[in-house]
Image 1 (tube, rainbow, N blue to C red):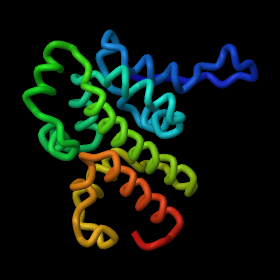
Image 2: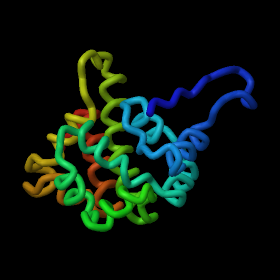
Image 3: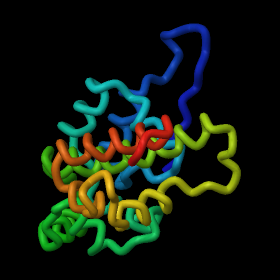
Length: 177
């Protein structure tokens, strides 16, 4: 699913990030936002817009697409986010959304990918860079700023995801991360 936000001078015709994330949450759409543009939209959305998406729930069957975009397995993604495989598989088969807690972790991961994509675009050298793949690999590597543990070990909590987002911001500024 690719979602386009049309920017115009008239606010009444502009599709808001809330509308984008709400559309992504509809079970009829059946997919988690999966393109880099969608990751950036999640990252740039305001907290209230992300809360709306979390409360609506992320479609469980979109997690396979998310894992593929990150060049990881579905099992590895589930483990990373602390998602119970049987529950997510059942919800995917039944075209159901994840719970709020599960959706929050998925949105947090998508937000991190959007953060990295935005950082690289701001650096002026985004050509050929795959942010989702980079995040997937970076999460698995031991990180000195975390006492040698891989960031993936923190992905199953919102607080851990915030720590990781802070590390990414430090990397952009050139601080030790």
